[in-house]
Length: 300
Image 1: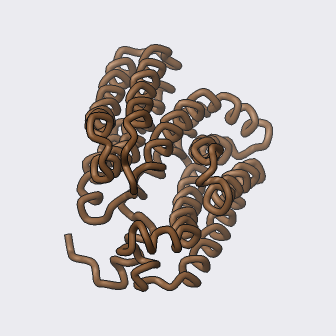
Image 2: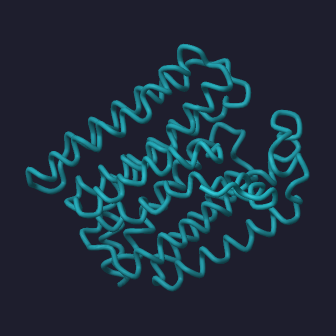
């Protein structure tokens, strides 16, 4: 992999590009939950999700620039490698691009993307350091899966049914995100074993829920769901356990990174559970790519 130049690396760090591979799976899992094959609307939803995710990353660092100057001075904004105004402009431009892509997929998709954008901006600007912060982030991730369902169904009546059908997998994805976000609140300071322990318990509960309640019949589906749930647990469980035993900033950050990467096998398991094994297995291939990218640019 070619090394990044100084300016490119600064923006890659600001936008957490190593975590981008965890985003398209939301739209694909949403399409599977809607009972439809991925199509043009799914691609537009994935593009909108990527834009809104990156908008959230840029806005997050803009909002945290004073805190990061003390706790993480090497980050792009406090180090001076990216100007605060440029980060804020990027957040605004990416949000507009995400909403435009969602609009091209239809009014239901735009409405869902609007709610998602609102959750992202509310989290970064107001809710991050409040008790509602993890809930807001969980809602954002759940809405991202619902965006995939709404965009794939396209027609308003179909989209409403698709969104209702996608609520259970969206809730599971949100539960995972709630656990990861709760751990991330201590990643700069460390010092608490309770969030990683809770995240470990949540991982086990989510795996059980996904594997134990099939939405589509078939031996291949069952094998795929079981294997993907195992991959999900293997990705997240050990780093959570290490952080619980030694809640240092370094191990806590590793646990957060592992939790982010674990989204990929969870998305794939949700897709397989809905019967979209052909979507799930290629999606799972993104996991080793995410691991490799995270060695270059931190996802947290």
